[in-house]
Image 1 (cartoon, rainbow, N blue to C red):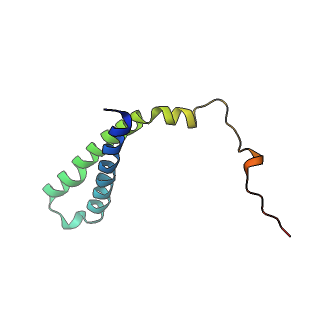
Image 2 (cartoon, rainbow, N blue to C red):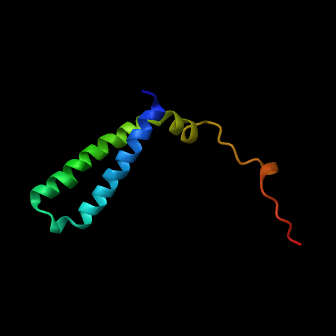
Image 3 (cartoon, rainbow, N blue to C red):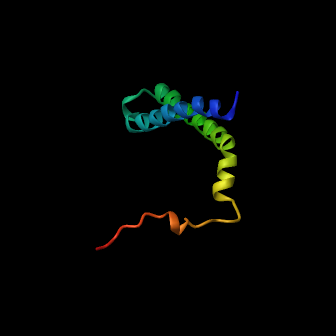
Length: 85
């Protein structure tokens, strides 16, 4: 499986788990203790693990964009020029 295919599977799962965390966090009082334990706390562990996997799969992009030694400024010739008059 390629990194791209793995990310296409992983990203929607991360989105669903993030929405789950938000909803169970807001509605936690209405859930039983057992349901909250499974839906919020255990799902948080799965979410954390998948976030680590997501970072590992994207590490080359992170390295290229945040840890590169030569940060470049945008090329001035390619910027949009709007006449003022």
